[in-house]
Image 1 (cartoon, one colour):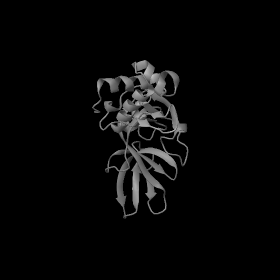
Image 2 (cartoon, helix red, strand yellow; image 1 turned 135 degrees about the vertical axis):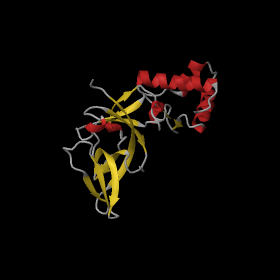
Image 3 (cartoon, helix red, strand yellow; image 1 turned 90 degrees about the vertical axis):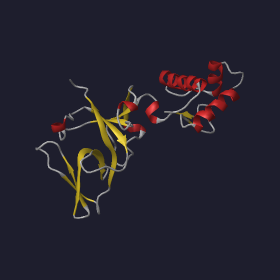
Image 4 (tube, helix red, strand yellow; image 1 turned 180 degrees about the vertical axis):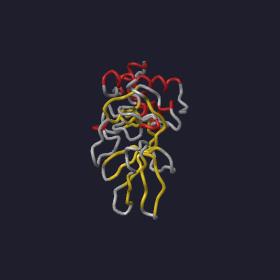
Length: 202
């Protein structure tokens, strides 16, 4: 947990509320006016203190250059269709936001991924569920992972490496064959691990 002063919490909450209402962050002048400061310079000092504590990022050269951590912007981002070759958290992949705290999951969730297909139904992951994902590039055998293979993103159980260069991504549905990945020729990466599921269709 970040240790913020009461004034810093007020400013941070104002920035979040302003951004939720308008789609962009407030200016220094707007923050100063809201907080009763005599000048924007006083707001700037508090913003830099918040940046030092990691509560936001101050971008130089623009009056609205404030960036909240992605999990604090509008809730957890919901990832829809992921374009091949693009980062999973690319702006064009974010379909919406879900107003739940990342701390609802352990470890914390960084985003929610819309599940497509029925390959994981035997462990209760269904079409259109929201998979809560902790962003990390390593996983243990048996973990449910979000993996990228040659630009395509899939949710599977991580199997053991075979013959040094081969690994299996296992479905949880007998109708689906394992995906065999040749690490020598495939562009393979782990994007994160599953930390929970939110069901939208009940």
